[in-house]
Length: 394
Figure 1 (cartoon, rainbow, N blue to C red):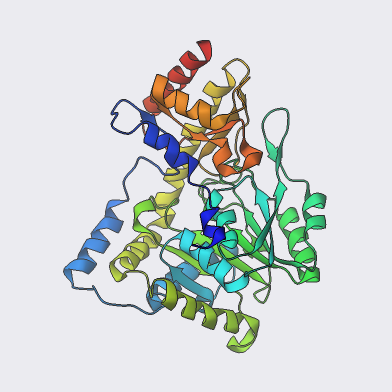
Figure 2: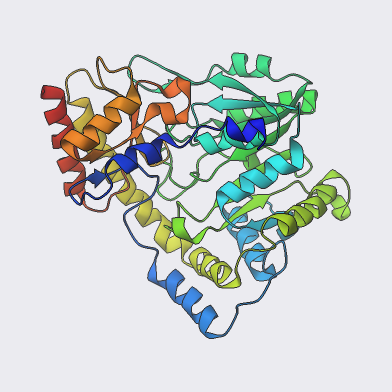
């Protein structure tokens, strides 16, 4: 076995979840998914596809009609977009891994903004790249901030990839367009690729309901060295479907670095998964068809859950928690608790409350806990708050 694989840490979230195995009294908020099922129209479209016998291979880059629909959806949020820049992937995490396979190899430097979902920093490490971490830092209220000057100083001509997840899992931190423009201008000077994980862009509470968070697509030119990873999982309640996409660079006349990247991506898709299942892609088409009606309602429900949970957390003595502008998580700190894994396990065993330990997202998150507020029933959030309050009183 390769040393890089042997050194990979196991999932601390799964470790906490395993502590609650066999118990039906645990209120589980540890995973990043809603407790709502996928919309009926999406399930019906997939079932109809299977009934038609669509059980064969598709094009590596995805069904042409799905690529066109994704391009139209993206244009509605960010302006210009050509379907030739879209690659359909078997999940958002696959989109990110394919990006790393395209760009990073042994000895390459990848700069990552952290804390972050651990898969993002593990992927370049698996490929032998060196990951340099630039940390967000919490203010006194618990809101996480980026020192832009520190990040730009870390990205040099040696840096192959800048990896940014915003809205961020776990902190909810969200980039401004000015920050994105500054990063993009700097990376143009250094020749650095940007890989932007924007899977939470629709789960944004800083604008009109149902609109998107600031995206690098808002400030980039088609030919920029930018890959944007997206997923159907969060905005369309399709976590188990494993369907995502990548936006790659484009260029005039279908030539240049963007065309090279897309051709290479087609080969990588062949070597990884060949293609996303056709019936799953049909579900994706149905999801995009209902996006304008469905997503704003989902965001309203998430915002209500966020506001309810944060009000409860902030009312607990000593708890440090700030209102996240994006995502589906409250990231908070309990007074006097430094070992987040031990605390999360204790909450499961003693209180039946399932939260994710901050250490799962890197050492920068140690001492914090992540609570997914994507729960349709407000009473579940209230019951969880009662259990946390009880634990703090003990």
